[in-house]
Image 1 (tube, one colour):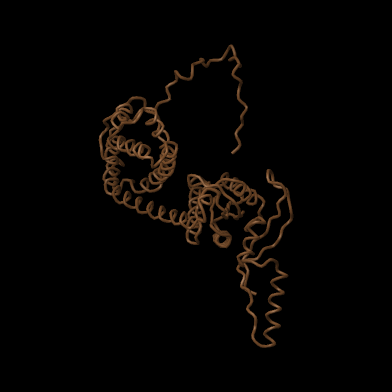
Image 2 (cartoon, rainbow, N blue to C red):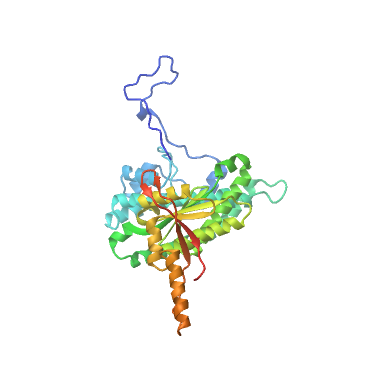
Length: 389
């Protein structure tokens, strides 16, 4: 996303006919008032398991945390400032006490504790929004004429809440076990911060035009189908879905072979689905910085650029990725070399015991060199599935 930084200077004077009053920033109250809707309060009590009891100041004091640190934890979790309204519960006090306790025990630094709060808040916020928008909304339609949604929502959440909570903890533990396993397998500590990974983007072609042609509901169904297909294929073949961006997904894999299989299966799946537009994929291999579940660095930027220049229904990879595929024996150095190997095997077979023929899974075709903005001259390679020689 490009941000326009053209802002007025500090010395700019407001126009004489301006109707906007110049109010000092510190006088503006940006706090959010807690809802006083009876149903919302009942649902909040049900979900949190406690009544509103504390103001933020009282919660911080009860937890033994400074108001400044409590506010930073609260904002990091993604919640709006609420002034000194009595809206917090025992659960909020316990959360503050736990985070500050980790810092006091020396298990986490204060900045790391803030990061824990932020990453947890961002992840669960998206999950909660999805559950309300897609799951509960469909189930809370009144089953009988005359029933209100209010009469259905409360008992439904009452039944679902413990099951969803248990499932959330189970999935989190499974993901934590997988992530811990990757830490154990890493060669050294530095590798966990700056790792060598295959990073790929998969992008729907012509999505902007589709947004003008399709109804909102149809567009939503298309995006959901795309994201679901990508998430399933990435997970099934050993990759990790980093994030979804509507018409684009970002995935990563520990090796080039895994990333190749994911990319080609994505192309194949979308080609078979007549409701889907064409797909293009770009992958790069190299050092990647990982932070809060996301990936950053030149390798990620290169993968994005390759995606933007990839042909429809095709996969473009960078030179480092191509080299890694040939190093692991997943692709021949060249088709000419593969033909020579096949000919040599046939010739040896005529004289007795045949020589084994390498079984390459993928083929690589060098494409034209071209300048890529911010990255210099790049020589992409076209990746394709290959039969055995």
